[in-house]
Length: 219
Image (cartoon, rainbow, N blue to C red):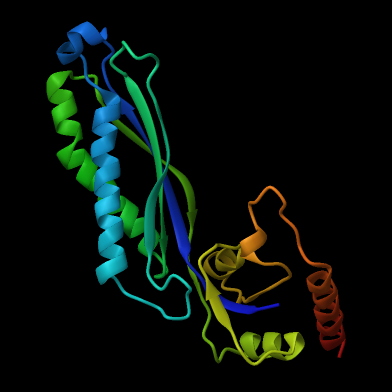
């Protein structure tokens, strides 16, 4: 089991594009929500490349920079109808405590300035609605913090790590100022797969860790 002292924060956003439906034979009279949504996904991809090339880095992460991606796109009703709605969901995982929200906020501001005005010019009821769908801060516990030293002693390890996935540990810190580390069984490599599993040896190691923690607290 790893001793995890940091993980990336995450901010997820849903963008709902409101276009104007028309028969495809008179497509110029409509407002194509999917095509405007494509402008947003293209910008997200461009900014993701900038984060990978130029942003702050932390070598303790397997992916040492913040990441950004479009994960869901839904829109359209039929081949011969100009789509009047398209939903785009995107996320940023930031290595800085609040970086993930800063990145997505900048994208929202860009879309409102660069995409939405043209949609409204074509029809005043068209536009984009943005909704926050997920938000948690990054975790960044100091490597020399007492809780890290204790976790290493109980886990029988001398090393520590940071991970790209999120946990509730950052909420304990941000909401209650409770120093936190993450120690537990399993591997992210087996998570969110059809045959998701935790090895028995990992469960046994976790049980031993908890027993040592109870003994420590009972002193």
